[in-house]
Length: 204
Image 1 (cartoon, rainbow, N blue to C red):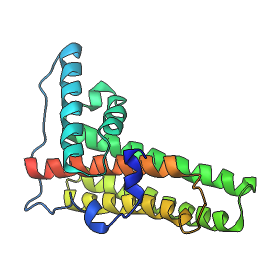
Image 2 (image 1 turned 30 degrees about the horizontal axis):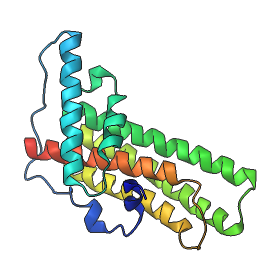
Image 3 (image 1 turned 90 degrees about the vertical axis):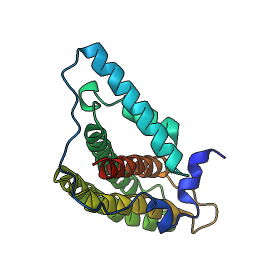
């Protein structure tokens, strides 16, 4: 089975907290890139994305390097010139994912194509997704205020919300989750953001 299935089996708090360390002092500096022409900036962005994804994937037994690369390469060049930009846009992608998941669940519940067990799981996932949206909003606020420790804790909680939603369907043998892709994407995006935030914590 493909590697990413590991994200929803046997997940423990210690796995997702591997990156969570409270910095000894709040970062007071911000990485900056001198004015560059577009081709130089693009090259810098590609190098930063590649090195960041490699470092984060190497630190994690769960994060997919390929997923990280594909996700971050979609970021506009202007937002990918430093770690702060990468972290912020990754959190925004996670927020969009969680918001879209809420809409998808609403449509599924209205459609009436699921049995009572699956409906119960979808209702639980709806609440978890709503919680994830709020936690992501708060995480972005904390990040912008350079409260990286708080942002780390919140991103960890978002990862757990995604895993909990997926695992709910697994409680019934043979029940297939209709939200596996959404949960996986949210989990991985949050893991990327969590890693980058911690890289910032230790760089300054």
